[in-house]
Structures are given as C-alpha cells and as structure tokens.
Image 1 (cartoon, rainbow, N blue to C red):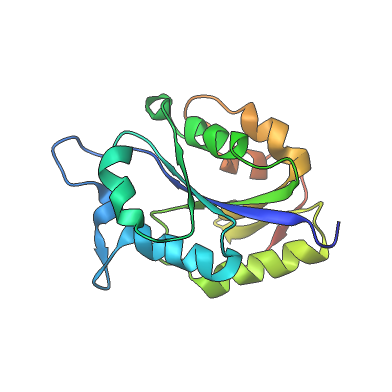
Image 2: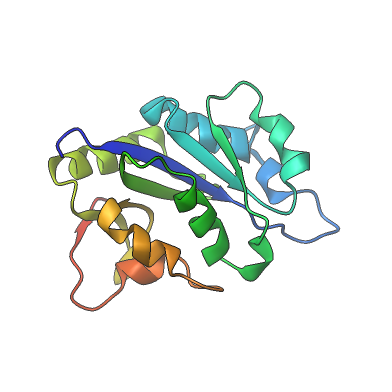
Length: 175
C-alpha cells in the first residue's frame, strides 16, 4: 500500500444566498476562490483532483477553465454537508486508496499544507490524517479506503468531521 492512489476532493457544492454572487467566485488576493483552491490541489496531486459542485454547477463550471480536474455535480446538495461528500466518494476509481477532503472555502490551506498531509499519509496509508482544530480534528483530512463506507453513510448535515471525532478513533495530526 505504500504507493496507494490518493484523490483530492474539493467540496464546493453549497449554494450560498440565492441573491448573492456565488461564494466560490469571491476574490482572494485578486484570484477567484475556486480556481485558486483547485490550483493548490492540482499542484500536489496533478490530475487526481475532483471538484464537487451543486446548485450553481452550470454557472461555476466555466471557471474551471483548463484545470486538470474532474467535475462532479451533486444533484442532492440541498440535503446538507453529507451529499457532496457522498458524490465525491462515489466518483472515485476502484484503485483509490484514500481521499483527501478539502472545503473550497479553506483559502488559508496552501499546497504545502496539502503536501504535508499527503506525505504523512503515504507513510501510513491505513491512517486517517487531519488538521488539528480546537480540541479535535477537521478538514483538510485524508480518509483511507476503509473509511469510504462510513463517508457514504453520512446523511443530512453530518460532515466528514464527524468521523474524525468518533471516540477511540486514531487520527494522525498534521498542523
């Protein structure tokens, strides 16, 4: 498993306020947020990046331009945080050994941060690897294939963070 395939899934499916421009287009240091975050992901994972869009997929898809990403459209985005996670996991190839989940809104996460997570996971691809947050862990996080059934079982507003906070679970922290 030392060379297990890893896919990055960038979650960007929620709509935001209907009368406002999409939050995914907000400028960060002069660049639109979604292409910025996808650029950071592709810098470390190349073509092994998927983006999950929802309500405004047709409006946001052109912003992907020539980025080497796979577009996944979540038609159930209104359900809550679980639906885009399930859509992203369902899109993965059978050879995928792990998925790094990242919210597109996490503009403070750099390519170097993602690379640190990946480097730690490659040493132990059966582990969950995540960023520490408050008294627990949060996204970005890498979930090994063994956690895919639990990710697919999430419903409603249950985000993947729920899996990182289960009692007795081992999560490797990467600041």
